[in-house]
Length: 493
Image 1 (cartoon, helix red, strand yellow):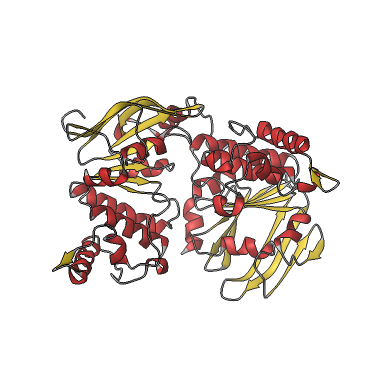
Image 2: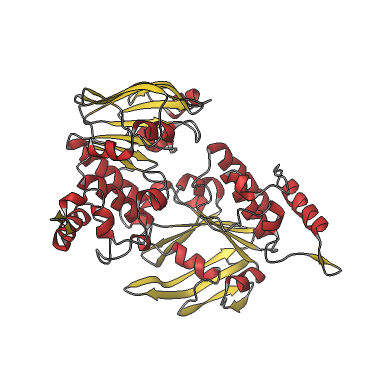
């Protein structure tokens, strides 16, 4: 690895109040390689990327780029030096066109005027080179998530970047879109681009990367050629212990039917949906992105109106006119978008945990701070949520701990059935196992879980039964014992 180093992370350290975010991190990255960066939430990956991108400045240590010691005070300086970042949350101007976004901040001019003709042609050439069909004048807000990501990549290429950093690039993509993105990454890499790839999905690391660096608790643990490490060893390096099982599903005997759905239809979205959920079981809902899984849950919970169908809850016909009624009847939702739909980012941890069951902490119309602290502390300890303080704003927690706060909210509400939509998206492997253990605990208490997931190993590993959706319909159901990836996918296409 020492024969052609493009970037050396030279003993970098940085601290934030109460946290040593990076502690003497030291490793190198080969030119023209795809280098994966992995670790649990809070391991220091994002902090390191922000230092490389010029957002943060390290307290000690150096960045050595192409043999030269560099220190970036701004993202602009990092881009000029050839380091570009495709962030997990896109940095695009949605009302502008594809061309305008790609040339944002570096507009080409001719005779003192904006040279639209040249910019459009260069954009056309970049997209053609990547074999992607996107109109150069299309407004970015009208594009799919995958196409927006491609625009981000083109922005990076347009800066003449030598190093492209990609932060969780596949998190919101369909399987087909992921394949397209991987093809683009490999093509750029073959043409000489060095790629630093951050992902919680270890299968991506093994299929894409040449090298992998593991961070844990702000420290560099190891850098290895991917061909020299297996999945079990990599997980152990990340979490600092041996995980006996990635999917610790406990055998259960389901009880009475809690929820029965018959003929649920919302025209143009879902049609003739039929399924049931029993106490003490995890029902998995599989299907490709856009198959109607989330829309089915929203219809059941009264978030979206239905055109026809019957819902029976605890042996009684019900129609939830809004989500509040569903909550009052004992149903809960861990939504796909936890940051915007599951949490209030600027509120404290204690306020997020107690907000649904606020009646438990209100006396004579006033919030009792002692009760708020007591209940939130109880669930922080029960779920082992790593928090500096109950007063910490939830936006400052890692993804795994944010997800636990969402779950804690519904446990405090004593929900009998919790729908969990992509419950471990963007969550590291150690926190995933902790979330699975929480699901097991809910089942032991006689509750039920409906889990939507795009990760088939997760569906197979944690479900008692699996229903499969495609284009707004349920196409089939499989028992745990008979389910395989191949059988599930056969219903999806």
